[in-house]
Length: 160
Image 1 (cartoon, one colour):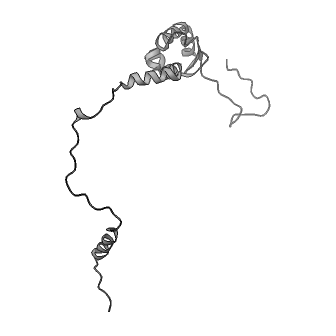
Image 2 (cartoon, rainbow, N blue to C red):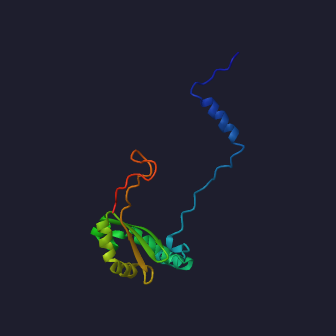
Image 3 (tube, rainbow, N blue to C red):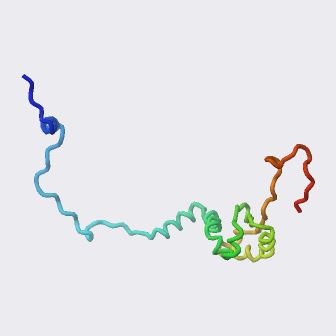
């Protein structure tokens, strides 16, 4: 004779629970302790996060690198909205900031105010951080490959 099976699976669940009874720890009897009031907890002196980060930055010698990242992140605030709309900083190496301008006109305009840019950047980033600003205009098109390329010397057009 075959045993009847509960289609809801309750009989299997009860058998599993009986089997786990020997493995699981016995249930706790009694009430849980109430949490201690905040005044009774031991608290360490908390230091503001900004002060802690400043200390870590100074200890690791990251001050100059963070100043340079500030240059890239705050370019519009440092050079003005109009100049920032037509240029972008591309790199920093050995005190020289490389700037790419969108046109030769903007490159010339930025070159004329380069001493003021150096002074402003040093004012914000720290004296001596920037020694020179190099401004580059757009690069001319290259006809080395593509539909318009020809073997040999090619056309003798002038690009200025």
